Length: 161
Image (cartoon, rainbow, N blue to C red; front, side, top):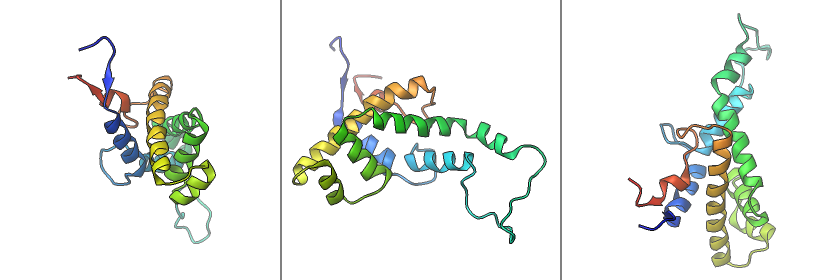
């Protein structure tokens, strides 16, 4: 074993893609869960169910309670946005258009000036690796727990027990 850690880049790539594309209930961290809970914290939920369309105020400050309860998810959403902005221009385009906006690959190829599927796949892989490195740094400074955003780099360290 050497002095510098070795990482499984294929595993990092798969885990980042799963993080952005997974939208299921359960304990797995996912971008969809973070976005959903961050929006709930801001009060961006569905219909109120009241025929007047006006939400009534309950005893206590419900919005404040919601913000406190979902604080990890608000910080996580900000951290993801910051990590994406910290990536290279092409990676930023791929991560934003593919995983945040859900756009088609041909649209992304056109916006990022990529020709052919091979160049797109290579750029997408690099974008995921770049995001994993950026989010690993940002999540520490925002104090985001592993169950909200995992450390993709730590997950893929080879030889770690």
